[in-house]
Length: 252
Image 1 (tube, rainbow, N blue to C red):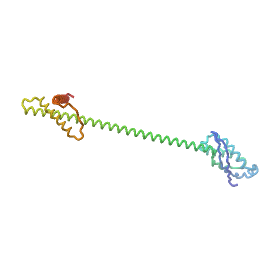
Image 2 (image 1 turned 90 degrees about the horizontal axis):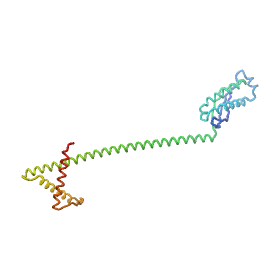
Image 3 (image 1 turned 45 degrees about the horizontal axis):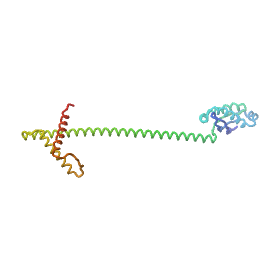
Image 4 (image 1 turned 90 degrees about the vertical axis):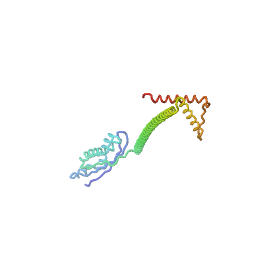
């Protein structure tokens, strides 16, 4: 009259043709008032229960793939209980529960499943690593582009300021020469501005030669250096100054 448990191991096949061993623990007892029926109608109730469990599992498990079998374990347990309970009721036995306690695929299948899972994880890790490297390279490229833009902008600003400084320097030279010529012609009556300009240019020329000669690491410059060439140098320098003055007065 006590509750008994019968552990049954059934080997069957799944929908994807994988053999698995399914263990079911059948908990049963003789129904009160049906002791005579349970005693006289069955010689081996445990063997009878096994037959119904095998029949139920081999009918239900092939409906699902191996992965789904682990998910629908409760559904399989209910199907087994309904089948066994209906069959054993006529023999005076009550089926209390039929929990599925273990699902064990073939060893080779388990190894293959583990290897597949390992490969998936390796692939995912490689994809994540590649994505991280891609993001790093994109960020480095963006930083490099920003650095180039900043450097180009700085060089442009420096060139602009350098051009402004050079323009102001030339303008100051022209204004200084104009002032020198005006003072000389005002102080010496009858002196032509062209002659004064030639004198100033020659003085500047000799000052330049002096500066070059006094430098420790100055470069050697070869230019025509005779009395007849002084006039030509002065003429060229004067023409350049006049052109610079005309350019500074041109409308913008």
